[in-house]
Image (cartoon, rainbow over all chains, first blue to last red; front, top):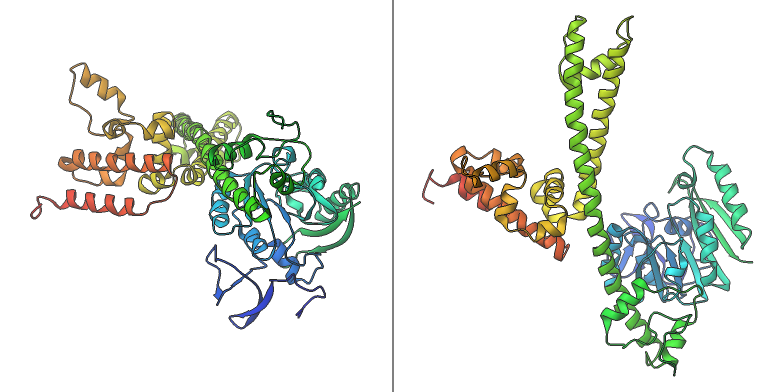
Length: 215
Length: 282
């Protein structure tokens, strides 16, 4: 199943040929005008950090079918693909404008639960999101990304996975991204064991993908 | 069973499974520190029959809660837009006044400049002895004009999110001005279209009501191409038609928030009819 990278793709994610190129795809209702091939729709690694991780062959630990808490869902581009392959998927987004689109994406996906909440305040959604989810997927473009991951540790099963895209420029536009990533990882290690890290270039500049499990 | 809500309560606790409004507001307003196995708890307490039933109810409630919460938050954004467009007008007005002062002063030193562009020209000078104060003032003027430009960009990027239909019909800046003059999108949505037509022409309107002068045909909507670009004897009808459609757009934006492109076509057709009548048969 894998043609580039080493890790197997989660069930429900496959490679299909779009315009003669092998690209990632999932099955579901199209949401943002992406190309489709029968019931499959293209998952563009340039528009999705999780897509880029899979495209790069990173071992995210996702097999398909898991219960997911997605932080920073924005207008729902990536989380729509996640919901295509995962089980119950909680999607947290703080900004109202993209959340409006997220609601439209969720409407046709019965396993996708949109929440207009601040990922820095997990107590405002802990009465909705269930305990012991299999994966927390994080793509929040705010300062304090390590803190967000640590605050949301409470939702994750002990054997679960944190899959985070860390954006250097969100922490500090002026500092060297390498230094920023080091600080973020150091903070994460207080609550997580970091299993893998990888740069998301060339799909996303100055982003570090992190896969971790609770300590 | 206790009939009070337990300290560590789920979103569904003690609520009627068919009462979607209460469930949605519990999702928006509730809180707890630690998550629990909510699906099992909901089944135990007979809120849901089984897991599928639980997730179906959760889906319905989260979609409804988030839709409502988005609408409320976007309404608060109309106030941000109001302040931004007022600040933009202030910055533009003051920048223009200062630019006049700069060109007058620069004239006394033998420079021939005019307007904000003139002030930018002076600001870019390497000041010769005796010009320092003038160049400094010109720099401030140029910075203020830059601030006005930034505020305009902010308004242009925000207005379509707050009022998508009004922004499409009026343009984002005029949409923001109307919202600011009304005091907010809700207030604008509740105005009769005759009031919207003369928003920004309050001085002329009250003069008319005191018996001085004729009733104003238009307020800020005069800046719209569909009024300004219509020949003077048809501007009254054009302003009335435009105000009517803008009022409908503001109501759709406030009450539903959905973009309705057919409003644009209706307005285009209406104005076209006004502009061409008299030329041939109406």
